[in-house]
Image 1 (cartoon, rainbow, N blue to C red):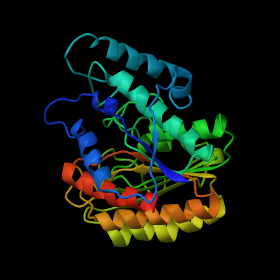
Image 2 (cartoon, rainbow, N blue to C red; image 1 turned 135 degrees about the vertical axis):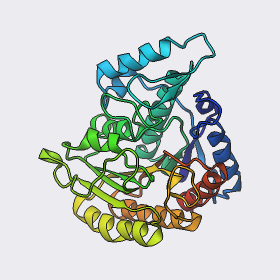
Image 3 (tube, helix red, strand yellow; image 1 turned 60 degrees about the horizontal axis):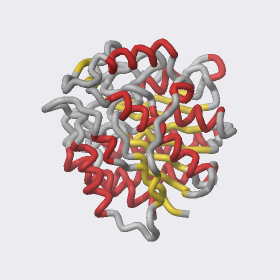
Image 4 (tube, rainbow, N blue to C red; image 1 turned 180 degrees about the horizontal axis):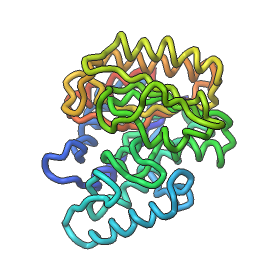
Length: 317
């Protein structure tokens, strides 16, 4: 089975303005990276589709969805940019449609992996999603792509247990909030602390059915392979031996790479391949090899391209 790829120029239509770090050129950087990947078999191309409102509502409140619609409608037919009224996320005239294509494209990719058309997948989507909470978009995020994918896999495809592993330099507070009391989704995060958004303490471990299903590993600026790879090897792997996920989803944020303008971690490209390999081993042991990687951060264009190259090369190996 091949590795699936979700990549479409429609993801450039979410405009954020000159000088914004989460810019359409990130798509071009990923394209450059994929040109350097030499897969042993052709990658399965996945076409994006728009997520329905019911699919977005798997993780977000109807009230928040209507807020996004109103904010986007105010820009329709103009060339203006605005701010999502719930937080620090710039939107443009096509941002709602692009965000729906991002979430829906990831769901299309979930179907491909669960149907056995591909074993692994990389979803190069914009805008990112892991800061979006049930009722608030923030941190460049509108809808939480990985959370919607996990809940879709659970409720629509019958997957019992899902791991979401997040190596973005910023804590995925939205993903944590969505699954804090869920129990069927295990959320694991390595992230810089103190740093935006100020969440992700090690004592945030879930509640109710979700107690013990949140595992945060905050590290100080300057952390790298020893801390982050060590957490994946020595904390995530044994946790997954107990949890036994049926599907692995990665919040693949490459702003934890050395030299990123929005982070102070020091991971190298080779170390992203190492983290990918750990997650592939977890997927092989517990989930029939099924692993879905979804792009989050990464704001140095050259750094993003280099890190994605090694990440995807590991996925297709």
